[in-house]
Length: 219
Image (cartoon, rainbow, N blue to C red):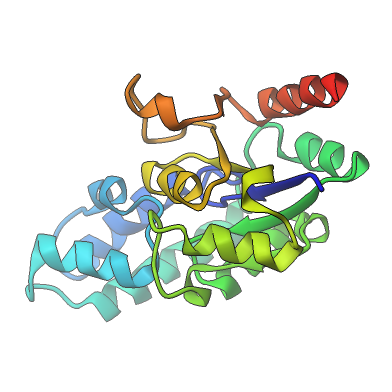
């Protein structure tokens, strides 16, 4: 069986940049100043790990619950006005994979309910057989748990599945789970040493589609 597991933020949707603005807004609201730079320390992590990273940075000098409230306020207003920004090539890739018999799932560190909102609002929910959010596994990326759970949910062997990711933690999680990691860079850029664990790297999802087309032609 052919299987592809998708990350969400920064891979399917250009939402990591929106989070930078949201954390700038929320940080100023709670008195710690613009905190959008924290995105680079949080890429690919689930909510519990994000809280730890923020506590390591700010200690007890801020209210994380208030940060979450203002962040959600910003995001809701942004998406209500602008919609969820879809990455170039997403629809083309999903249509191709669907037409050629690939099983697909989402493995995102974001809470499952929020993942479903993004998928439904962009009309791509129908393409995925399973959705595993960060709240469905005990250990965050870069641990392999979420990718193993996604593969199990669709009945795929990890060693025969591909993972589409943009972050270091996500790519390590896929690699640690035994999948073939394909990187589509967003905010974080890898180096030559890190690239050794990758199956492939593509500039966008249209190039990923071309990669699968070539592999399918070879059989």
